[in-house]
Length: 153
Image (tube, rainbow, N blue to C red):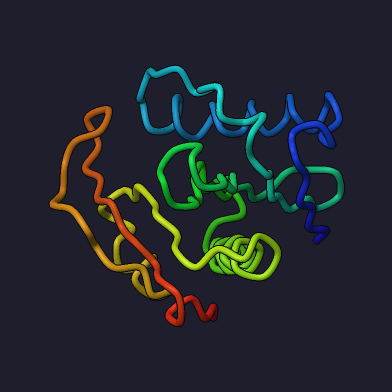
């Protein structure tokens, strides 16, 4: 497994194509949720992804403060279906938190989580800061991770 973190300009054309393809496969097709997946935030973000034998298997987008929220954020978190249940999601989120904390010196991270994953994100120290609401017909909750609670697994 090889892990990469790149800003938008460092991505090759093929890497960009692949990550957009996989995001669309999960968030639009698999979740049956037609929306504009390419939202104009990628060029301001960092892209963390894992490859195994040239195949993208896990991905998340790291958004600096001011891109989605006043706080830094993690989003578009995915593990390809055939790679789920192997601990990749935990490693992916841990690496994303570590990057924000250690490389970008961020103390607060806000996420918009699908509600069924609430306990997963709570295991990293995220706390709910909203009621459950529908976003694209999927129950979501806003969550926040602050300062000293940012220790990863």
